[in-house]
Amino acid sequence: MNEIRVTGGNSLHGSISIQGAKNSALPMMAASLLHRGISVLKGCPRISDVFCMEGILRELGAVTWWDDHDLYLDCTEANKTEVSAEYTEKMRSSVILLGVLLARNKKGRIGYPGGCVIGRRPVDLHISALRSLGARITEGGFFIYGECDCLKGNRIILGKTSVGATEQAILAAVTSKGETVLENCAKEPEILWLCRYLKTMGADIQGEGSSVIRIKGVKELSGGTMRVPSDRIVAGTYICAAAITRSEITIENAPIEELEAFLEVYEKMGGQYEDKSGKLRVNGKFVCHPIHCLETEAYPGFPTDLQSPVLAVLATIPGQSHIRESIFEDRFRAAKELVRMGAHIEVKGADARIDGGYPLTGCRVKADELRGGAALVLAAIAAQGETCITGAGFIRRGYEHICEDLKALGCQEIREE
Ligand code: EPZ
Image (cartoon, rainbow, N blue to C red; front, side, top):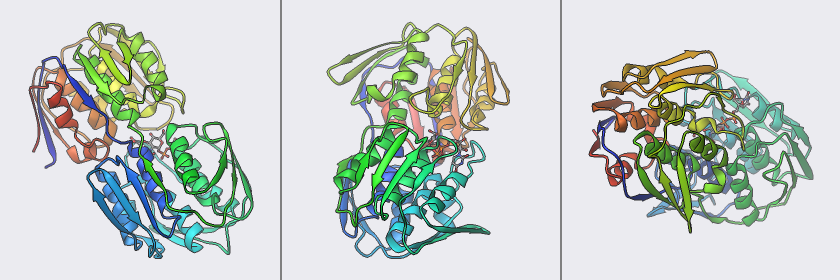
């Protein structure tokens, strides 16, 4: 099953609920390794990145099992220290396990992290944060090695705002000796949720959600139990589905408070929404305004993960739109496939210029990364005729049931083959 076939052209209706957040679940899974016992993540998304992280934890000796969407992680015997490249090359967020392995075992070896091909994705900030805490890090061939006598708190100033490096430093610092002050932290909701989860385990953290996080190391952490928050990027993707088909839909449990910058752009396009006691009524019928300059930024700015879905929507809005991608070097990969469907998009470096409003026609297109793949699904449900999207595996990394969800919203013909 690596293709999604879609016959588009009809409007959507009805309601769907949002899965657990991939980018919160993954660091929470890594954090569970800091406790030598059982932790539970409720409402965990059953997506391939979570299964990959589960495979890594099992490789380290953890025992894991599911009860519907509740993931149980027993890390009592998880004392191995090496993560094979087979796993790490599949998923960027595996890199945050190095800090956890150092905190738990005083040593660790991980394969270089892979993940989406959306840019260079170096790990220098991760390595410098761990070195600041007293780890000795060496790089060789396909692996990064770390060891330490014990991790000691320190002042860490991250050279660039990085979600993963912020998570890495937090995970390594929570059981280190002494206090850590982490500056220039990322403020994404997934940082907040990781800290909330760690605090239920007994961690002493202040300032999460701001650019300075203070951590007092504690001797050990107890087991955590927490519900994974709903996925803001999946919710934003489905709002784009309503916008691109000019439809009205309802989204249950959308984390509206985490989507402010995105909803601002959606309204500028002409989109409407109403928060009706936890249900988000979305009305994309009046979407018609191009966006003259949209720039992706670190949270609370416009999220880079919704750049490709919005690119697809702007391709259907008559007029000149412009997107600047400021976070990753190569995140307009879906543009060339959208052009094959009839979109008029010109990409030059960090800028995409869209001459919107040309009709989209179904054809064979290729997804080669997660959010670009989601953008192709959105274009396909709006296009006339049938679209076949190869590389569906990339989409499954982050969307648990995008076909079922869009079918439930009335998309006539959408199936995975
Ligand atoms: C996280 O990736 C997310 N992944 C990404 O979501 C998201 O796009 C990104 O944050 C930005 O919000 C997960 O949470 C698993 P960064 P991450 O470190 O942590 C540079 C998705 O689609 N950088 O915040 O890898 C980096 O190159 C994925 O769900 C360094 O220079 O992103 C980028 O330009 C895609 N050195 C910038 O920082 C480093 O050591 C921000 O990257 C680390 C990062």
